[in-house]
Image (cartoon, rainbow, N blue to C red; front, side, top):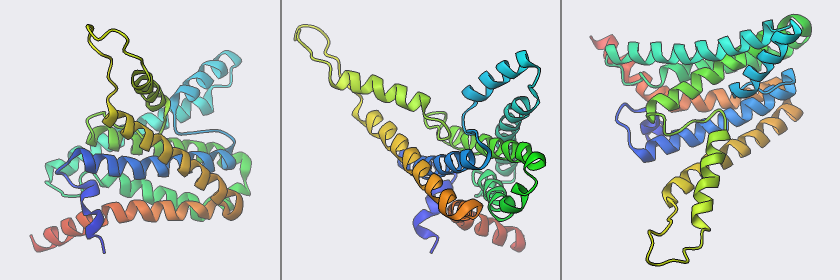
Length: 243
């Protein structure tokens, strides 16, 4: 059952595999970001707002939570680098999937215990914000490392910017045939549009899921991530047991 998605986290990469993985992760990021906003009242997938919030709160003398959120995202990205490089040293087929296993486990914790944590809102809200930022740091670093920084999934500012640039080229009227024509990179246009739409659909699904199901709506996201990495992880488990 895992064969169709075996290549999503394979060590042997192709642009098509990167885009497939990026599309799924963009959906997960959008859903987590939107659902997380309904849970904690702020978005946790992009650091632009967090760093701005850190600056504001620094001036106001209330910078602890924003600072912890930025640090958590940073530690998430660092954790991905550690896990992937460690997996590579051991020649694990699941090296790229290890951070996704951690992300899936944390999403399961958030989904299963989130309702209980919400009963002690004052205590656990900061923990939830930090947890979600760490998860987003993990995920963004995974696809960034796999695609050699061509694809990012937890924020769409750069994607929308590049989409606008390519659309501008596409709609540009070349009135002077003697000059070098302006041409859009249609493949890049398609890739960025696909990622933005996936993030948007994920956000809609996450908001609807949290509204109607609550915290448990993150469990399908965790299962999706587990499916992506399960086959190479099982291969590694069999190989290590046989060694």
